[in-house]
Image (cartoon, rainbow, N blue to C red; front, side, top):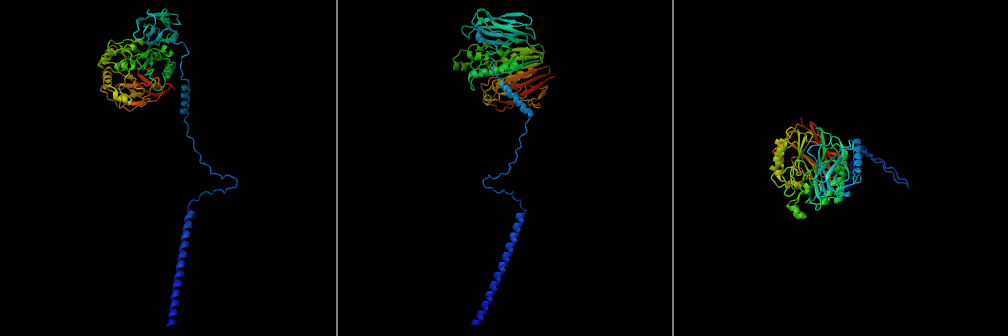
Amino acid sequence: MRKKNTGLRAIFTSAVLLILVVTAAWTVKARSQKEKEQEAVEAEAPQPAETPSEVPGEEPQKPPEPAVEEPETDPAAEEEEQRAARERESFVTDYTSAPLLETTPIKCLSMEVGERATEVRFNWMSPSGAAGQVVCKNPETGETLTFTAECTASSTMPGYYVNKAVVSELQPGASYAYQVGNDAGGWSPEYQFDVPDTGNDITFLVTSDAQIGQSENDDISVTIDTWDKVVTRLVNYVPEAQFLLHNGDQVAVYGDAEQYDGFLNHLALYRIPLAPVVGNHDVPNENSMEETGLPGLPYFYEHFYVPNRSGDGCSQYDKDGDYYFVRGDVLFIVLNSSTIQPTDTHETYVRAVVDDHKDIKWKIVIQHFPAYSSVEHYQKKLDPWIAASLAYLSEPNEIDLILTGHDHAYSRSKFVDGSCRTIEGYDYASGATAMNPEGTLYVTCGTASGCIYQQVTPEEHIAFQGQPEVPTALKIDVTENDLHITSYLVDSWSVYDEYTIHKE
């Protein structure tokens, strides 16, 4: 029995050993097959670049960096930037080219537009109560013309007298040297202006909101200097311009003599007639009188002498109304929007002036307040009657263009009908031309001194708007069939916007 058990144990042990040997063999075979498959996968994968072996004492070499392609330069854009940079460098004041009025007792000389191109108007303050004179000499012919001023005591400048003189029948295309004053009160230095050639094609300039004294960005002296740079550049770069419009807010405080000096005493303004517009800062009202302590007096009218001034439409204290003048085939109507009377006063005036000039092709209305503002807080404050009144007077009188200021930002509207609705279907892109458009175009000029730059907010009537944060001005050319508006960044003399109205 023991022997039998011993035999069975031997058989069992042999069987177990056989099973272990077979299992081990299958395991080795499976592992070998898996390793072969892994090697095949690694062989197909991309191999990393070999890293050069480091040499003792030397920095390891880095692989070369990929070349960065330089952006292609636009030769035209580069040339334009260089040109603009040169213009900014030459944007300088012109205080030393001739003596200023401070060299005499004469104060606040201004030369305004006349009723027609062969007429100019002069306004100045003198310590003499005797009537002053304007003496004009034509250097080419030797002719001397003398015009006597109307003289009244100033209510705004104690001890001074306001002189207003009309100089007429000037020779088209001639250059005149002139002085104002008299022997008792002193004479101004001699200045020179050119009379434009008569014709229907005209060029004029538009600025706004010099607002001397509103030095939110800079000291008043900086604002005065910037204004001088602007008017100097405009007169030098556009010598063919017949006059310069300033769309209101000549000063920040209506009765500040220093601010009026800062606005007027610039040599360029003695060379080109000015068409001033009444702004809200130029005239007193109950709020500003309480703020400044200055009385309600005719400050604006005592500093400027404009043609065809209306007897009504006056400000509450500063008795200046609307006025108009004609150049070529263009009728200019300037409205005093800083008034207390209903807007129908302006509507009546415009209708009467247009009726008296039925044969004139182009009609332009100018006032300080815009109908459609780019500035959010002005959008909330502006009286909706301003837009309604301007639209109402524009449609029946076929007004082509309305020029405004106040925003200290630039904007150009779509064409607007008599119900304040925009007229679609025209190309309103910068540089485009509208062919025989219906409705009226509204353009708001930015600040010419940089005293404040307001940020813009979209408005449904406005097609183009912007705040370039540099002084801006407009050059407008009118021919028989085209009215072309160009908006300039004056410091670089770069075109900011342009648009043409073509009318057969």
